[in-house]
Image 1 (cartoon, rainbow, N blue to C red):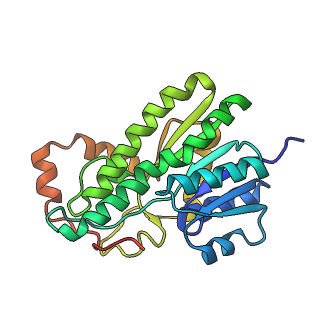
Image 2: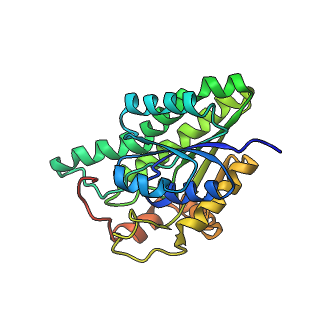
Length: 255
């Protein structure tokens, strides 16, 4: 009988990260769960074989400390999932939005780096593993009122591609999952229709499948893969005409 998988997940106190924690726990995995909200994180971990770490992915030192604690307490993870992220509306003309821009970029891009960095050498020494980052269909084109989020997810996808090539020879797979709309607290504030919205539990199953097969890039659900292709190839004048007046995500500092 094989040993249970060791899985380290950020953003585990709610939404997609919490759903992933429950999914892997159901198969007997030993978990390291990272989140910013102690009470919510404890609720998710209750009854699971899980170590919890209170940390913000924007804080490189705190994430490194959590990673080293997991390595010492549980061992080298088989899977690391960077599921933490921030989504909030932003406008460049508003000086007060600068902090929101910084928070989104730090969490959604540097948060991946902070999460993966401590585990690469141990994984390579052990003979491999999987690093999974969550990008988004929103990173395919720039969305009005969502410049920070779209830019951060585009950067995340390119970063994950570069990392995939860097780590192939060391048998560490890098998996990029680009979701459309997932029913989480992050999307419930959106004041517009969200086509093909899927539950966090269904998304977790599909992400786990992509990790298991070590697929380089997966768009979920499958309908959004076609939407992403269409958006990517729309001529600029057509794209502008369709999206210039598109509804926008509410602005504000992330909590």
